[in-house]
Length: 295
Length: 327
Image: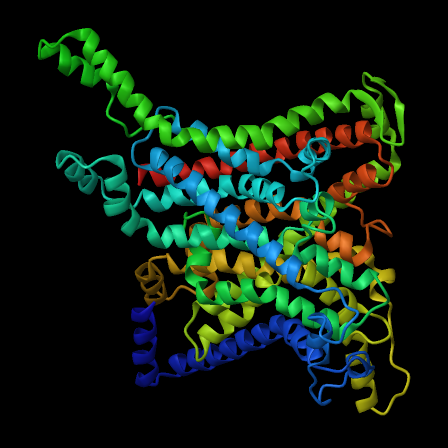
């Protein structure tokens, strides 16, 4: 990439008409990219702006872009003005479900991926495909039995049921991602370790972990995002006690008409953890999303 | 399916043990122990996945052959293929199959094309590229329900949404007090759902394709340009073939997620006006009709359809994998 830019820059300085033309289209394309970026970002910007408007300014036609800012929506959302339902339990539920299931995913996926990547068992690709194929099955097809079992065992409306389900939802992708990250660990290092008499635990913590850490981070990030975002299972299997943030969001609208600023504030707050994590780890996100196939 | 393994052949180990004159039985025993040690780390994940994902599905298959409606608990029994007959003769179910296909194909194709365009734009160096990339990723990072709510209430709403608000604003610029104010969600409900999903999934496609573009060797492109190849030729004969596996991967992953979409359909139209897709239909059969037998049959049908897609998709991935193994 850098060589390409320097090359075209060098040619640009040479100043031939063709180069000048290319430079002009180049800056036009850059402008186009900027316009696209702004267009895609606009709805989000609008959401954030609306969240800082008063309810009357939020619902106007034409839109009141320049209206004074207000924290009304956020105060309403956090229930400071009284009467509102507190968003803290759903936020804490979401956090619990996402963090605990992500930890479980790592706990199960890392050893599995290790077995698949570093010391391949026979028929390893079959096992790998089994993992991926579970991801192809629509979750909704297993929903009813899970619901019935939960109903009969009193696990309905419990956050731990969601933890279990989210773990199974993210585990296949995690194994796939981790396998390709762990395949990066040089075999010589492992052999050296085993000659030195290192056990599995030592090998994992001293040799594999440092190399695989970025991959583990990417896997954790993606598992966290998908758990945090999940709606269908949370909606069906939780109620008053264990409702997660997405369930809470859908409930905001149906109760007593629409409060646009409040809904936008809620949407902003609930998206914030994923936004922060995603921005912070853009590159890892890319690598993870392509199942580690992109190096 | 590639069955190549990189493990040292156990037979070779045993042969070594034999030649060394060591006791055959002990060698075999340690061999077996070693194999177990290799497999052991794999087992927890496997057992867990079988328990949590495969067992419920088996139960779904069993329930699909029973007559079971929660509203009539006494009338339970073996239903043979009644539920399946109901599924295939139910016009709503057939409609939702069509909707699912249309929704998935439209969203995946359009966002793949848009994503490709954006990835090509972003692949070149220009001022503020990092910022533009961040702006473009944002839609993918918004919680899906939040994004569905945003589109429904803040953008599509006929009386105060941003879309109609902007129309009013533009029309006023030209001195007109009579701007068109379409009701987006009633006039074209499926397009409204698709639009929000395309907005959400285009960044995902772009991210994968951009990573693909940046893994391309730049010297071939540079050489082609020196030889006077046009930008289109370079795209057609160099970029596109290189991107093929990334395009396939993006389409595959996009399909897996968009087929299962529930959030947008549930939030934006509540499945009304011909937007009910399969996940939403099953959700409704369970929670409105309480017909467990029928819902399970629907689930099984969905799984069979998905398996068709998945077989094709897995073949794609297996070709990816083969490349990775051989390289």
